[in-house]
Length: 180
Image (tube, rainbow, N blue to C red):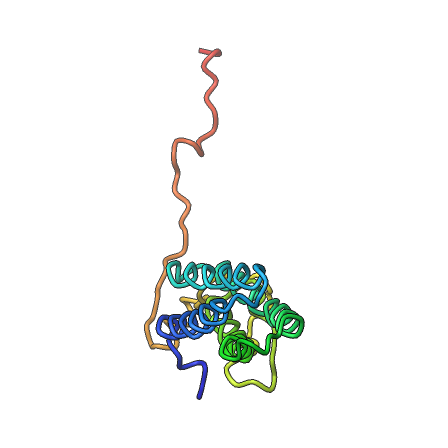
């Protein structure tokens, strides 16, 4: 599947629900500490924020950062608080942990599409990731199109007359009014 062809809206909703369901089901068994639902709730709020403001790079950057950090936090939390009594809760927490690297890559791709501050980061082995040819790390949205080159390549001729020097009152020599 080519990530470049995936639309952001439906994919973001799918990511939201793919993480919401395991988080809710894993926290119902009360074997995880309160930090687990806290950072997962922050991640889900950032996903909602990025869905509501589709032009904001900040929302996707926050969601991506929390998601990458949550990989480490989930591994530590599951390793420390693993319970043999709630096997379904364990399964849902591990499922959520296994989804995180995939969603991190998808969120990073969407961040690249929104031309975020770090969009020049290259991932050479991954299709759909990589440099967009922009060398400046603080790229603004959209690409610049040189209008003179674009019009000449389309066969449109643009004639601009050269500026002419006209005499205007501001270019006349000053008049001495005291000598009269």
